[in-house]
Image (tube, rainbow, N blue to C red):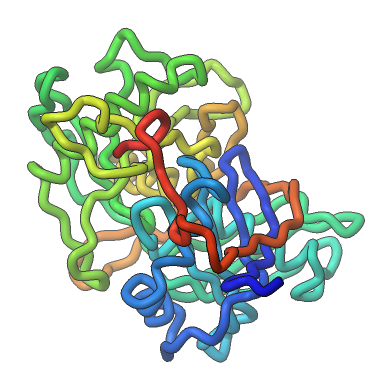
Length: 351
């Protein structure tokens, strides 16, 4: 029988599930990966919806599409797709893409270290992958510049009252709140529902009350939230839980005050947090920052230099972490399927 679409993908996780599409998508117009991302967003968003919504997806799932690089210095390109947007950069997804490229033989692996350059929508990302016995044991990438947009800003959140937040850019704009403002919450998996509820409310209030601007990406605003706080893990310095939106928040419908927790320590969220800490004088250039996720695994960040980004004081971060392949899959779209874009239901999605 014939299928409308046949997609080949490698499923990975770093805690967070991150699907990597390796084949089945035709040529995408654009002179850069950023332009290709814009084309998908504007002309073929069905691919993102089909892969991330049910029955092929679920709220915390992310997806990446490997494409031929456009920049002459890049070894491969990739487009990042999440539940409500196309981020220009994602740390966990970058680690997964590098792992798939090397472990699946799409790019040559050199042991003990493979160095390569990937082209994200945000630009060139330098990769250093530690490899042993055909496996990628750690990926370190040099991210785009990160910066603090708001420090210790007070916002009014319905039901929660006044909440103090920082806003940082690490590849996305994060509204970051110290979890100790909410004594009934701990950064543990069993508190996931309440973390998602409070985080979604904080994100929406921050969107409405704290304007942000990135000099290179007009119109990009706060799209994600992070609760953070101390950890008792001796292998970490701080702990966080990032909540990714799975739909729009409507203040009149509390059922929409939710999202999906990032199951990994969150690479761009770690970069945003480090930028905020540096702006407050609490993290030095060259100092390791071990950031624990909701499941207890750790990404290690480091700020390597200060830069000026069109008048904004920014820092360049690196992130180190690991991802694991757990599935090799072929996804198809039956021409008679009544849900070609997938579907969501309000029991686990923000409808």
